[in-house]
Amino acid sequence: MNLSNLQPNTLRKNKKRVGRGGKRGTFSGKGSKGQKSRAGASVRAGFRGGDNRIWQLFPKQRGASKKPGRAGNDSPHRKHRFYRLRKDSPSVVNVEEFNGFNDGETVNPKALFEKGILRRMDKGVKVLGDGELDRKLVFEGFSLSKSARDKIIKAGGTVK
Image 1 (tube, rainbow, N blue to C red):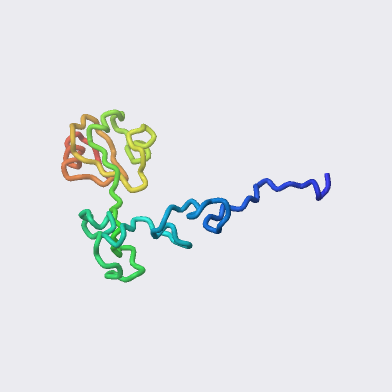
Image 2: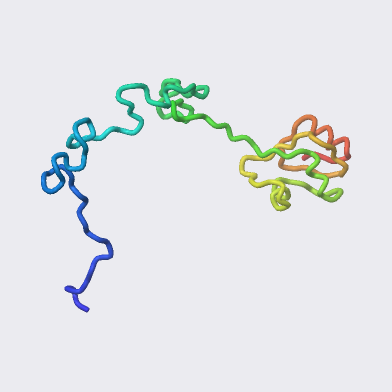
């Protein structure tokens, strides 16, 4: 093995250059006339010959067409037609899901995650009051709706 035997891993093949005479006929494979047959021509995506772009014809989400820079150009709440504000909402669990725990047990988001009731807990967990609770449990690390808090206290549980 010496330097004259080395071969590159990638092929160094030039791209076919169309429209420079040779054996491709009169129009060199570009068809006849029109914008796309010219040298250096390109039509950007979504361009419809000067007509409205397709996404401008449809109704927008609320706030999608506000002028950027209202809240300052560097603001994270600036609106743009392709940008929609999304609120980080917590995971939701109903009171009846906690009947799978033992009496007197301390329940927190980590315990729900380990049992497989929750898929994610990074945005917090809110307990809602759907269903009935028949266990005395200690709740910590949750935000609770008013009806959920009432049902937990009625069942003899506590909220920390």
